[in-house]
Image 1 (cartoon, rainbow, N blue to C red):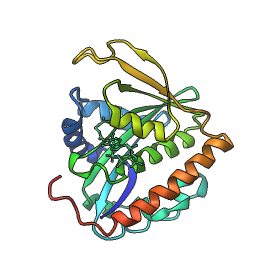
Image 2 (tube, rainbow, N blue to C red; image 1 turned 30 degrees about the vertical axis):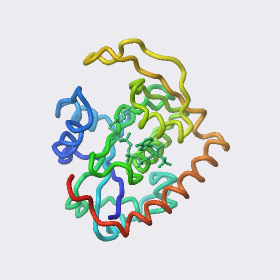
Image 3 (cartoon, rainbow, N blue to C red; image 1 turned 90 degrees about the vertical axis):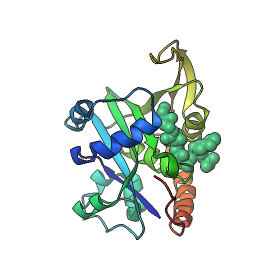
Image 4 (cartoon, protein in one colour; image 1 turned 45 degrees about the vertical axis):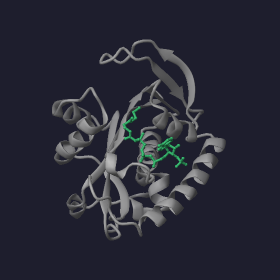
Length: 214
Ligand SMILES: CC(C)(COP(=O)(O)OP(=O)(O)OC[C@H]1O[C@@H](n2cnc3c(N)ncnc32)[C@H](O)[C@@H]1OP(=O)(O)O)[C@@H](O)C(=O)NCCC(=O)NCCS
């Protein structure tokens, strides 16, 4: 399967909420998503889709708007009406506060985990944060969520304290994580290397069939 990311639209909310229900114990309303999607100056949401064939090429857009990742490997980035036919297998969002990009959410449908889609989404969110002129990235993650923490550590997020009893469903603490400046040459070089490895992995995934359940 081929996996690619594109901006979330209001038509996508229902599919996104199905993945959300399978991934989190506290849920956002459709109105919350609509509000976020209608605030593109500070909020960006993306979806990952699965396609059995290479996704249609996106129409040419000015290089500045396309982001580093999209300009490097355009085949993994779709942007056409016809891509709506491909099922959503993950989603994520980033919110800008002054110069900080806050990763607000990221999830992959359970049957599609472990195939590089979470990483593809995080890269898409980093591109969106760069487009919003964020200088650093931050997020909160449950202290027990080691899988997500591993993904964030891989992308240079570092633990920087906790928010006690942050999660209202079970009173769990949140681990706060921050990156170094994402525009620094060191971070950009790290990103370049990670993306090279990710795209090699996704090229291998392209030959794999879809999971049996989604
Ligand atoms: C966290 C999540 C988005 C990762 O998505 P994914 O598509 O399964 O992850 P990927 O296949 O892209 O893996 C990327 C990295 O994540 C980490 N990771 C993924 N699965 C892992 C596992 N089972 N154990 C440990 N680390 C894991 C690794 O660092 C991995 O890199 P590697 O393959 O080089 O080891 C996914 O597990 C998910 O949706 N979880 C539920 C929702 C959630 O917890 N979201 C985070 C909220 S803060």
